[in-house]
Length: 437
Image (cartoon, rainbow, N blue to C red):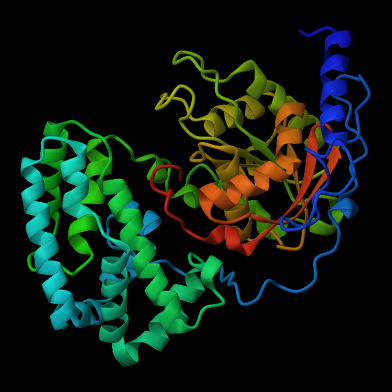
């Protein structure tokens, strides 16, 4: 255990950094940094500081035109990874009439035939550069394919955009676009995402198997997007990168008890809707839960017992060391259960690999599971991460790495606690989802 003097020294350093403007209150991800530093807690063990949800501020409006339709049922192709990470293609493949239009279009048929030939040629690739060239899409090629697809959908486009693309919420970051532009961008981005996954650096033997499996998984002639998509899925499978679908479906599995309890929660009785705890990996393959991860859980448990929130959300995948057999969220859940936190109060996100996706994924879960969107959420962690989250560089990192900022409001409440109002934009599926789900 650290001495009280050491802890005070660390806190003092963190507060100096905060006062210098690195970690100050952010009421809006696009606004300038304000001059409010985190409040230092007393050295009273796990005593819960005063946590004022009002500091998150009020948010006007409902984030229109972004969608939050909890009744929406995503398309199912039977390929779980495709359904979760490549929803635009999943939606097209699940509708035979739409897929028929795409396959019948002369321009798209030509693109598809060329792509299928390039996929077959990839079997002889000896290195990643060759494989990448075989499935790469230039910006012009992606734009041309997306334009042709929008044209081929014709009079079916408005209903597809309205009832499937928009209602899914998976494209909320572009919700302000008109129907044609929205579908066009979704397809172009999907091609880019698939190409990224298809060109992972794997062994020649693994690549050859991935190409063979990709060709076997689809009937010829393929739709224009299928060669790249099929190789992306088979490469991820061959490389053991199935993190995005491990533990799924969460709602009827690890999260079933909490999901069942959510409709009966009296939200007005709690200052916060949930306590979010980002994981902290041990860094060695034999340790299930790090000391730091346990300490974060202890902070959350103290707040839960004090009635701060009815739910605790644990976020973290198979991260440290890379591809460890332990998922941070699952191990944190086991620990909290062992110290008396009930199953019905615990939600897990066993997928996130970074702080960016910790906040995005927990926002997704809370919004999808019926937690009121206007209720503030408490992010509870160690002082170092807490200061980092509230700083300007973190919002910039979110935009750079995941293409969005998953909160509407963010404010520091204590050295261990940050108030967050999740945003519907967090429902967006973006390019890194297959590898940082």
